[in-house]
Length: 135
Image (cartoon, rainbow, N blue to C red; front, side, top):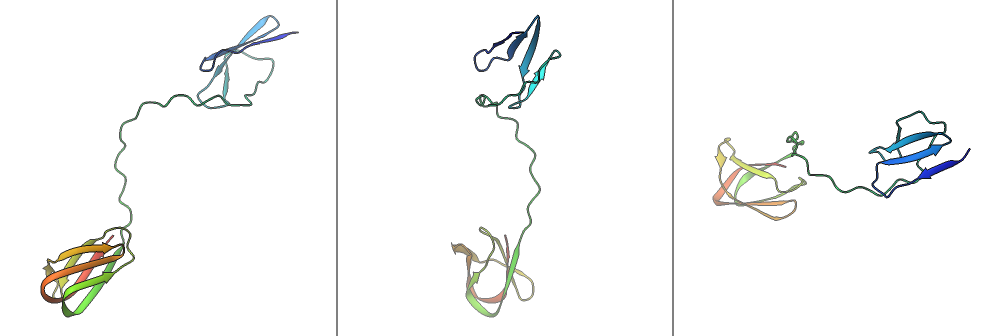
């Protein structure tokens, strides 16, 4: 019994293995090393070395927006009135800053981020209150 193996150029879909009087068609699947035999074979074949990676496919549609990640908060109280509040924190990135006076009314100040982990808030007049940072 003689075996004849025809190997086509890379990218070809069919390899024919002729064994005796029968022909077995072997198709290479999309998964590296996978073989799909379209007719019964008398021998088990194994791909030892996967071929080269194929060309990149088209870009798909954008997926749905993911769920928001957990947010961290940091709060610092300034009991003594000051015109400039400096806050060192360990939040990631540039946090959202809210300021309220000691009675709970929101105050507007100029917010600066001079360095990672540092927030400076400047008010027109000295004020006491609470800074809430959300990262």
